[in-house]
Image (cartoon, rainbow, N blue to C red; front, side, top):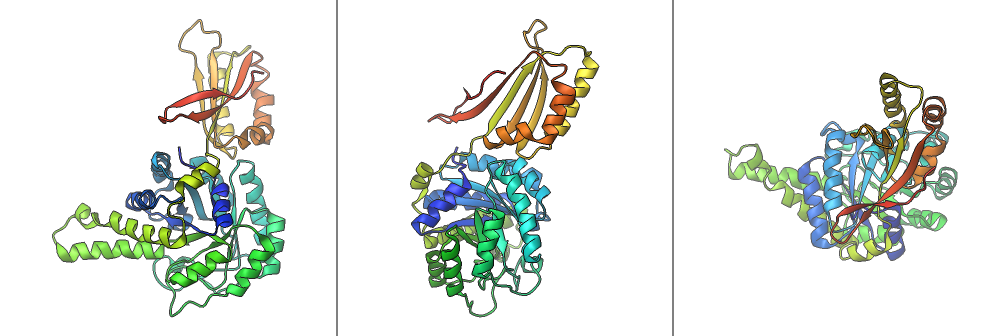
Length: 407
C-alpha cells in the first residue's frame, strides 16, 4: 500500500534537494497518465485535486478511483486537496481519502489568512493530516485555469512568512515570488533572493504554484532554495488538448474514445519529463523506506443494550451514523446486528478512521462525547471496544491487527 505520509514525503525531498510534482488531475486519463509516469520514472508523486476544478468532475465519484489507483501503485503516492474553499471542504476531502490539504486564504489580509489556516491546522493535525498554507498571492495570467485566480501579484515577505508559519503551524508553505497560475507572458522573472531569505527563515518545505513556463535553470534554482513541491497543471492540460486536436486532424471521423486515445500517453510523457527534471526520478524505493505508510484504523465496538426495543435501537444507530460520521477524520460509520440469535453480543459499530491520530481526537470530540454519554453508554453497559490497524503483507493481503484493548 504505497500511500505514504505526505509530510514525510516532502521532508525527504527538502532534505535531499529535489522536488515532488503535485499534478492536478481532472479525469481518469490524467490519473492513469500521471501514475504511469511515476512508475516508469520510479518517482514519488502527489495526486492533486483542486476544488477550483470541481466543475470538471464529481469529487465524491472520482476519489474512490484515485485512492484505488494510489493503493495499487508500487511507488509512493500522496493525495492532496488543493485550493480548498473552506475548512468544511478539507474535512470532506479527508473523509474521502486525501492525506494532505490546502485551503486557499491567500486573498485575505494577513490576520484573516492566519485565523482561517490555524483553524484548518487544528482540525487536520487532529486527523494526522499535514497542511499546506499559502502566503502572498499568485495570480492567473493566461491559459487554462488562469481566470480562476484574478488579482495582482503580491510577493511573500520573509518576515511575514516566519510569523505566518509560527502562528498557524503549517507543515509546508506556498510562496509567491513571481510565478503565475496558467502560462506566463514573456520571460518569467523570479525573485530568488526573496526565496532564499524565506527558506533560511523557515527551514520547512516550500511550494511553488504555477510551474508552467519555467526553464530548466529556473526549476533548478527554485529547488536549490527550498522548494520541495511544485504544482503543475496548465502544461499537462495543454499537451492533452494538443493530443485531441492532432487526433481530430488525423481522423475527423473519430468518436469520443478515438479522440481521447492519445491523451493518457501525452499526459504521462509530460509528467515523466518533469519528474526527471526535478530530481524525483529513481527515488521511489528510498522514499518508501523513509516514509510512514498511510494506514487507516478501524474502531470496533460490540455490545448489548438494556431497556430498549428494536425500534429504539435502530433510532439510536441512525443518530450515531449521522453524528459520528460528521466528525473530522471519520471516513465511514457502519452499525450492525448479529446474524445468529444466540450471539454473545447482539450489536456492533464499525467506525473507520483515516489515521491513528483520530483515535484520540475522536474520543474527546464534543459530538462523540455527547452521543456516547446521552444515548449510547446508558443503555450499552456490556460492550467491548477495540481499535484495529490495517496491516499489509508482502502479497498485499490485508489482515486485522489487534492494537487496542477491551474496555
